[in-house]
Length: 125
Length: 284
Image (cartoon, rainbow over the protein chains, first blue to last red):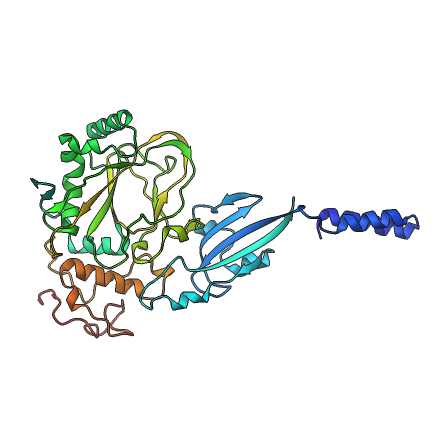
């Protein structure tokens, strides 16, 4: 729940306890609590790892947050997440797992940059 | 020092076995500040007058040919990697930018080949100081061993192991063409010229650079810095193939699997599977 949603909920609860909540106020409060189209913004996080595990080491990253592209600090030691699991713990949702079709690539040919997870997070505008 | 023959040239090779192997591992060699300041100034002045993306007229200037294209250290390295009578550049590109600017997408340049052969080299020349603030070229060492395509790389951002080729004026770096690279972001202000050109092999590969007496094909480490990013030992095998090809010994390459040569290890004998016909240092 966002800070704004908490405020609305508290206000409704207070008025209900005080016996002053009207039907109109209840309807408006519920409308305000429901997500409205266009009110959320999607952030995207690409994490390339050295294996398919959620605990694999992150070897590449790109983040699109608030519509801004970021590659993280130059030194990988300073990147926000060392594993995909850390990003999940921080509220990111995985929307794409590494493509197992990579197994079909030639046995002797390393290909591409690791195993790519794509994650999303929604924030209020 | 150097004999020009039509569009080809020859000179003394300058790299050692270890340096050639290092090129196979890294995919590039950087020569810092090897071009005299006066030539850097003349090049910059020329590029100010011919500011299009292909100032190929530079190749008509003797001072540019002698000090840049046939620069002793660089030409010696090119000679080591491409053999005698290597073909000289026929085109100069200038990635001329006015800072500040953002980084490019990661890419490999078009018309690449990810095999073990090294038949051409792409070379970059900075005529001005190019510190981090001036957006030097970024390279991923060892990535010449990892197949990719530019259009599949556009979403990549920070990559562990990336090197920014910061260097003083007059620096030249030579690369395996298919290495992953991009222009880095520039936060400073000013003009950056970055000239790119190409050399080709015209003769079969041969180990005719500086041979080290104690260089041992059996025990040298073939590990590339790209190793953490790919399947275990695959880069060692790629490096060994590339090095043997450069030595003219590729037909002797074999990989018998598991712990055999050319994997790195603390063994109690010559590595199993080491090709018998490869040279070994003379025993004491």
